[in-house]
Length: 114
Image (cartoon, one colour):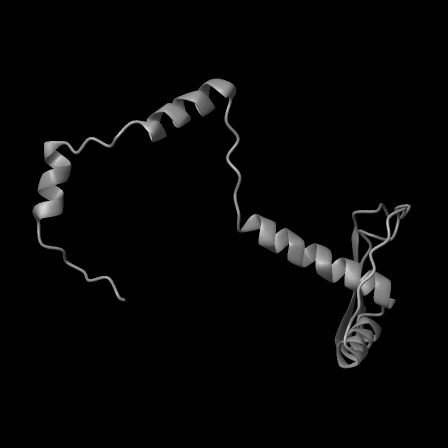
């Protein structure tokens, strides 16, 4: 089982899940946080329910949330030439052609909700 594997076990009617992504690597960096006692107890209960220690649970949860946040912010990679063309297009004033002007004059079939 490598460091990026997931393991599933079925015991009767419930499924136990072990995420092993963070278990096989050497950890040199430290992350320290202060938490409210009630939050700490909640995290400890959730870690125990997940069959993980608190550190593994917090790292796994934070990493999953970080991936979600970053996935919501797509990055577009451009070659230097494409980046230059994009920059130039942004710096030029927009030109409204007759087809666009006509479309803007037509009555809308919808209304924006404010």
